[in-house]
Length: 269
Image (cartoon, rainbow, N blue to C red):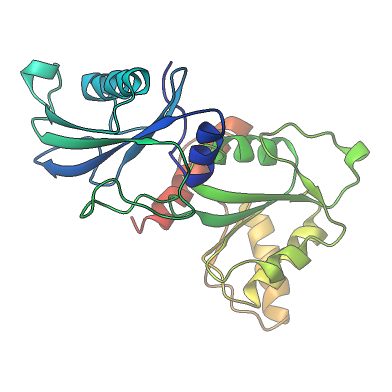
């Protein structure tokens, strides 16, 4: 079974609760490699999460981890040249350390004394306001990415049933969520109402934020800029329309475009 998602301390706790588990991490690398030092896997007899780059190197790592679970070995080190011997064309070199875990660590940990610190990946806070078709598609696109997503809609649940990988919070005044968000949070505004959108955007502009995107046309942007300027708000960082310059108005296309835009901003591209 292929690995899904990133390795995390929470997932490690879930694995260990079901029995002994092996953690495998890249402790050294040279040359071109698909993942860097500190990338890690969590392996049980039936499944694994995380990745050290895929391919034959990852398959051998998972196989070695499962042998450790069978024979009770505590530690192991793999030397993996990413060349013809592994049918991988990266050309680099990985040293992967494996360790059997029976008690989950309480916080970040290392497999080796001088090894990299293994911890949860950093997660930017993102608030998605609106549970319409685009909002649902966007939440589905963001869910597997390294973001901490909060999803809000102002309508009563019976007014618009939603489909998504995380719960949608029903809040009559969603702008209150904007006020409470971290200072570097991203905000995506796409509710059912221009009036609700305006209050959310105004709330975000009145405080520190990392990114503020508003779905809409050029005419909607012009109307919003006029009303926001009347309130004395600086709109220079308001992004409208949102997404990369990719043709298409289908919700899934818009969601993919916006998710890619947020990744670029989050990683300083």
